[in-house]
Length: 435
Image 1 (cartoon, rainbow, N blue to C red):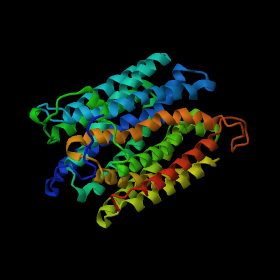
Image 2 (cartoon, rainbow, N blue to C red):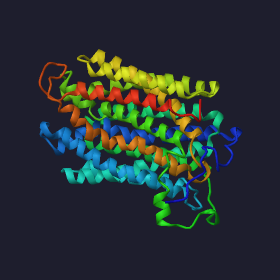
Image 3 (cartoon, rainbow, N blue to C red):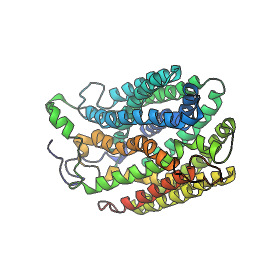
Image 4 (cartoon, one colour):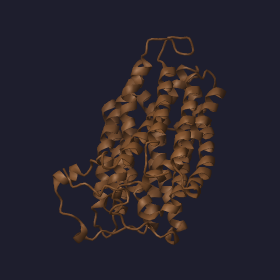
C-alpha cells in the first residue's frame, strides 16, 4: 500500500492562497465552468436520457429498467475515472499546467460521448456513448473542484462554495429548460447542446486560469502499486474526511431518488401524460433553483462569518428529508412543487457549506488535492450506480401506490430518499475538525 499522507488534515499542505489574489475573473470563470459541467451532467439525467431511452426501448414496461442499466454502467466507469483523473492531474508536469489539460480532455470526451448517445438506435451504442460522456464529465468534475483548495483561501471558501452551489442549481434549471425547448425539435439536439455549453465554458476557464505548475523533479517516480494504493484514504487516520464522504454519499442517494425517476413519477403517480410531465419538470426545477440560489448566497458567506459549518449541513439535510417525504405523498402538481422548494432549501444550504467544510479538512492538500477531491467526488458518483440498482427494490414493493392503483411504488422510493437525507445530516455531525 502507498505511503499515507500526514495524519492531520492540515499537515503537509502549502499555505492557503493569499486572499488578495482571489481575482474576480477567476471566480466568474470558475462559476461558469462549474455551471457548464453540471448542465452537461444533469440535463441528460433529468430529462433527455429518459426520453432517449423511450426511443431505443419503446416498451413502457421495461423503460425504467433500461434507464437503470445505462445509468449503472456509466456510473461504474465514472467511479473509476473520477479519482484517476484527479491523480493524473496531481502528477501532470505540462507547460499548460496541472489542471488545464485535463479540463480540456474532459470537455472533449463529454461532447464526443453525447454525440454517440444522440445518434444511438439501440441500447448498446447508447451505453457506449454514455460511458464516454461519464469519463468526460467525471474528469472535469475531479479536476475542476481541485481549483477550490488550489486557489481559494479558507476565509472565502464558504462564499465560493455557495456560488458553486448556485451554479449547480442554475444548471439544473437551465438544463431542464433547454431540454424542454430543444426536445420539441430534436432529442439529439437536446442531448448535444449541453455538452457544447460545458466545452465553451471550460475553454474560457482555461484561458483565464493561472494554473499551478509541477516541476518534473518534484514528481515522485511512477509506481503502479503506489498509484493504485494512493486512492485509499484511511478512515482511521482521517475520520473527518470519511464522515464527510458518507454524508455526501447519502445526500446524493437522496437526490438521485428524485432526479433519475422524476419524469416517470409525474406520469405514474400524479397521472400526467409524458408531454405534460416534460412541461412540469422545468417549473419544478425553477422553484427548486430559485430557493437554492437564495439560500446559497446567504448561508455560504454566513458560514464564513460565523466560522461554523456543521450545524448548517445538519439542518439542511433534515429540511431536504422533509421535502422528499412530502413529495412521496404528492398527488397534485402544487404539492409536488412545494416539496421541490423544500428540497431546494435543504439542498442549497447543504451544498453551499458542505464543500467548504470538506476543503477545510482535506488531507495533504499540497500533493493530493485533485486526487483526494476525486475520491470525495466518488460520493457524488457512486449513488448514480447504487440508486438505480436500489430503486427497483422500492419500486417493486407489492403494495398499492398512493394513488390507489397498482404500479411501481414511487411513494416508497421517495421515502427511501428522505431516509438517506437524514443519514447525511447525522453523518456530518461526527466531523470533529471543524465547528
